[in-house]
Image (cartoon, one colour):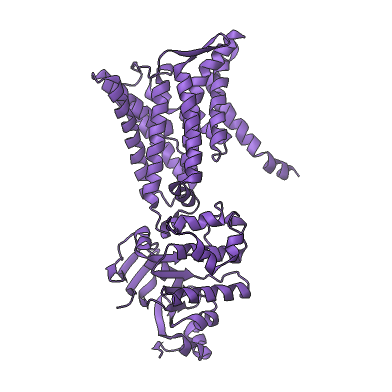
Amino acid sequence: MDGLLTAATAGLSAGGAYAILGVCAVFTYRLVAVVNFTGAAIGATGAFAMVALIEAGMAQFPAIVLGVLAGTLTATAIGVVMTRWFSGATASTKAAVTAALLVGMIAVGLRLTGGQDAHLFPAVAPGSAFRFAGVEVTNAGVLTVILAVVFTFAAETFLARTRTGLRLRALSERPMAAELMGIPVRRLAITVWMLTGAMTTVALIIIAPQRSPNFASMSLLVVPALAAALIGAFSSFRAALLGGLLIGIVEGLASGIDRFSQYRGAVPFIVILAVLLWSQRGARWDEAR
Amino acid sequence: MSLLDVSGLVVNRAGVGVVRGTSVTAEAGQISVLLGANGAGKTTLLEGIAGIAPVAAGRVVLNGADLTRASPGDRARAGLALIEQGRTVFARLTTEENLRVSMDPETGPENAYALFPELRQRSGIAAGMLSGGEQQMLVIARALLARPRVLMIDEMSAGLAPVIVSRLMKAVRRLADEGMAVLLVEQFASLALAIGDRAYVLRRGGVVYEGGCDTLARDPERLHHLYLGDAPVGRGE
């Protein structure tokens, strides 16, 4: 039992990161109508930029700052591409474009980071925060969960209470009507990309020491992120937050059970499948009738 | 010089000229009515002026400033507002939030509520739940709060009850009387001519009549022929 609790607690750190990535995915979808497959790749770009700087001799803190900046700039560049050439495209076309960009980013990222060459990611929040029921809870786990919760409520408050948030909600519904009212549509959309780029980079920098340190596997963290966003129906920040945490915990539990540990990576796929089947139940029932 | 001066505008769609060298003007305090049969190019003309449809030739000048190459957002910020067809409310936002999107944070939505008092009672309701007439009132009120110099309205009466259309027409007249220039595309020619000052009749992307609304309102047979294309191109009083 203690072993399972330890495994579940270990999954909390990953769950926090999934939650941040999932909330970012909801944020991007709700406000600029893009299912963004590049989310984790953007974070991976920033995380590897940080490692490159540290390997070149830079101190950790400025390297982290520059890494987050690199992730933000990468997200901005993708935002510019999406708003300049695909603003009028359908949601499926936009999703396909980001999937294509993901493939390109992984190819370039693997090349630039030396493929499977090991990189040592420094722990941003090393050590143990506290013990819970005899299980050590790491600082990284606590930090990612706190960041996920703060980001979720900050996003909700920002959209509900500020003028810019209101304009973003208007823009997400009718971009052309918003532009015809003088709302700076492109600037706001790129700001959304910048913000989510910075947040995903922070999340990946925190959890990188506990993950497989290669560009492709970090970029594919988009799968649990999108699973978390799907739990929130790409609409609810809170459901995406809980979904991300839940996926991380279930993954952790799976890794603690010998029979399932090698399949723990399949947890997000099972979640995606289950949510899609659940969401289609009404249509299938209608069809059956 | 007119407040809005559109000259020789050419707008193509899929390589076909939909607006062909059209010139129209709008004056402060006046309503210019654009009439014409379906496919005459009225909506495309407004989209060209607003910057949604790419302009192949011609000029759009607002109060002396050439906006021909400006983005739709820049044109809006310069004072050119377009109310598109189809009651483009932000459906998930409440009525008041729709108004807050465009209004100056320093001013409230009072001007909008003065124009359409029923919106005040519906202020907390999602705009998507409003009736068609209320939605059209909301988009007009929302545009008003952005304080445009020129308000372009495309087919505001489509699908609405006559009593609502009549109220909307009176509201538009009131906006013009308060100094706004209005460019109105309308399918109900008689209603539009009743509140308008200057009329343009478009056929196949070009202006075939330009003159006073009252002149055209007094001669429905001529208007009928202008629509159908068997009347000579002309200018009214």
